[in-house]
Length: 328
Ligand SMILES: [Zn+2]
Image (cartoon, rainbow, N blue to C red; front, top):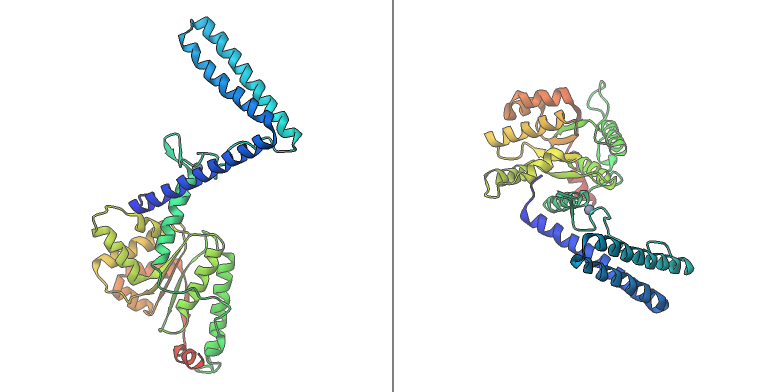
């Protein structure tokens, strides 16, 4: 996945820091051990000397060289053996004097062979999500501070359940969804008027899912499209943000339909919705539009994907924001 240069630089900085810290700590440990156990210095010098000696083999005839190198090797191994015994004597682990890298695979260089190490890839991903998360303008809401008492307990008609009962069902669905979340969770479409709690519940889900260690990308549709547009028509030539939208464990698009709709936003939305369905990754979309309005604004290719592939939560009732303000 291509990332912005700053992300690479930041990752390199962290890798350097990890490596330097591990090596500095090792130097300190060796010095400490040398002070408590003077024999260690002797054995260490013996090891260094054997390596230095072995270099002299370059000027020897092949037969002699092999014999000489072998001798130095034995000398080196004997010293190593002695160090091992010293550690045993002090009740210290066998690897006590070795550098403890954050990632033993690449020894914190970020590279194994000719490829980026998995720790490096992980680091780039974390940094990219961190950066994307900073742009999310909304604070995280929780299930615990979602108040059902804001919703009327009077049904509109005798055939219907009250808004409060309906919301209790939706709240339970969302709580369960977050609880059971994995990469195969269903996608969810939340429709209904402004101020009925769609944003609150999608944020509550996002918060829980992040807590579980999944990568979550959350933002308003308007901000997502702006970011995609900058990337598409910018000079960087990167598609890192689009890839994150396609590959994150959970994508939450808030307030779809509030953005200025263009042929770019319509095709970008279709691409994201469709690709994530095809790769089986869950998406949560909230919108004030109903399905007919979605079809009119974005084409029926998209609305039919929603109907066929998304769980649909319909939020009904009166705007609760006024009540919340009065209470605060
Ligand atoms: Zn590594």
